[in-house]
Length: 68
Image 1 (cartoon, rainbow, N blue to C red):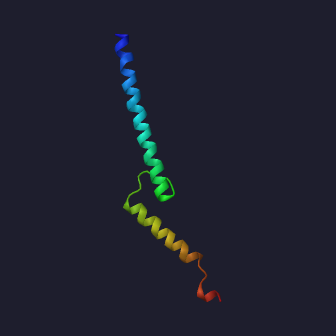
Image 2: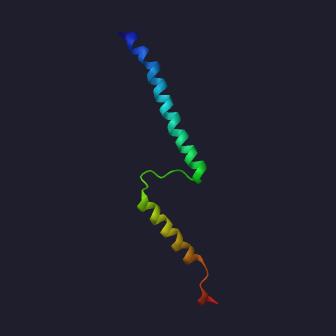
Image 3: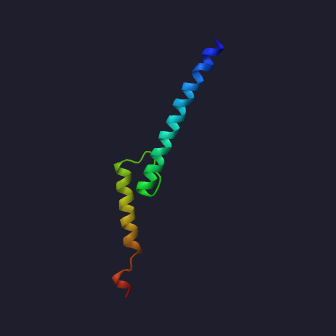
């Protein structure tokens, strides 16, 4: 009976290793394509809010015409 368990460890180890390889490959490919790691749970709303916040910060950081 113990040999049956030992025989199962090799395929299970291969499967677990390949899952880890695939997950890390996704991480590094996304990071290379976008320049930053993927945020887990980011949906369309979150992306729109990030875009809006970035635009607001650019507007606020630009010199205003009334300051001259």
